[in-house]
Image 1: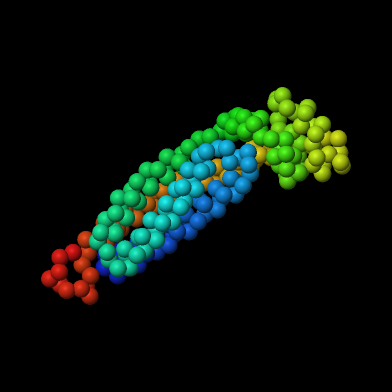
Image 2 (image 1 turned 60 degrees about the horizontal axis):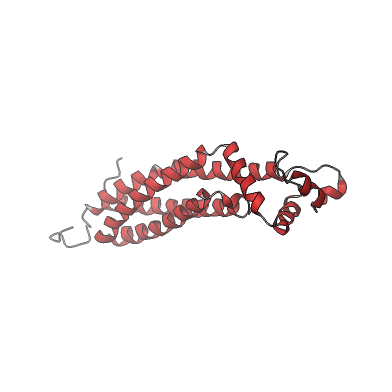
Length: 210
């Protein structure tokens, strides 16, 4: 049976906004996990994902309030802003999926070269690795000054660059996939809000204009 009644549209819109809240929290959480690594945080698009997650969370709260109260003005701005969020989220998600490993490696290499020695040593100890990539001019210096635990157990350690690449590639794929999939549901959210906004509340005065 098609959901066409006032109560059904209201419940569907509320449920969809609860999903948006969960997606917003997921985007913020995964992006924060990716940004937690100092080198990966230099990929500025991760900051954009956090902004999308926060904005989606806020607009979902507004959508819940608007749906619960059948608030005409709030639902109108909800439709407009959610449409803009769709465009922005779609672009960010495609960008996350489009960044290849070579581009990530270039960003990580450039970021590593400007980090202080103390920050490099802290990252090496945290990830139990030494140096960045074999091609970097700092590789020999990093090997001699490395204070990771693996250095005391073996003469060779895993390169930090490979671990950073694995970390950033996983974060970008999760963010891009989740963001792209749920961006299309925002079109459904705009349609539901438009439909619900034009329906009459059966509990209201029948002569009232909605």
